[in-house]
Amino acid sequence: MQKPVTFLLLILSIGLILGGAVSAQDVDVVVIDENDDLVEVANPGDEVAADVFVSGEEPLCEAFVEISVDPETGLEFLPDEALMTTSDLGIWISNTDPIWGGFFYYDDVSQLWIWDIGTVGEIGEGTADPTAELIAPAIVTDLGEITVYTDLWNWEGQTDPLVSSDWYTFISVEPVPPGPEPVPVAAGTVPMQTTGSPIALLVLAIFSIIGGTVYGKFR
Image (tube, rainbow, N blue to C red; front, side, top):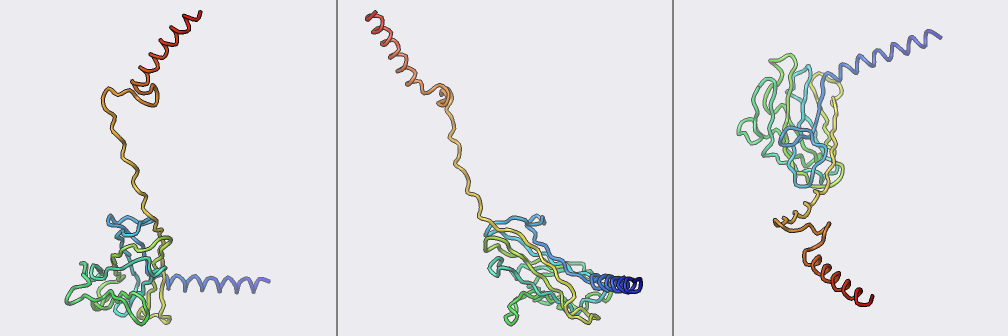
């Protein structure tokens, strides 16, 4: 019985090694607000941003990321406001840059948003561990759970074109309407909830006097 167990452990070890090799080239996504905080709950109309980070051990010249949203009506991306940077560049590039722009766009064929990392050149040729990051602003346009999916494709040197996947989920809810503003209490006013109004107290005193007089006469 030892041989099958040994063989099984060998298979598991190989799987872990291969899994570690693949996981060295990853895509990660989160959704952040204007303060760079993670978004857990948002309201329709809020501006958020998908923050996508790619890292690995191979050049990024042929890498691209597919980005989708479930439901499709959950977010409205603002491609003109998208920014990206890489470990080689060290600066943020606008999607409207006349030279390097156009890296984030909607593909009508796949009906997915595409982040074409290789648009800005031979990324990773000058660094041992190349990285790239995308900031894609968007408007929240639906209610309920909203999930952003990312798939990293066609990394150079990989046999499987799909290298890594990740997703991030947050909840969109209706904003809570503001409550009524408190009515200011004028100085000298007797609190209504404890003693009643001054007029009511005066009327009560008069009836007490009259009632006492009438009761005295009948005695």
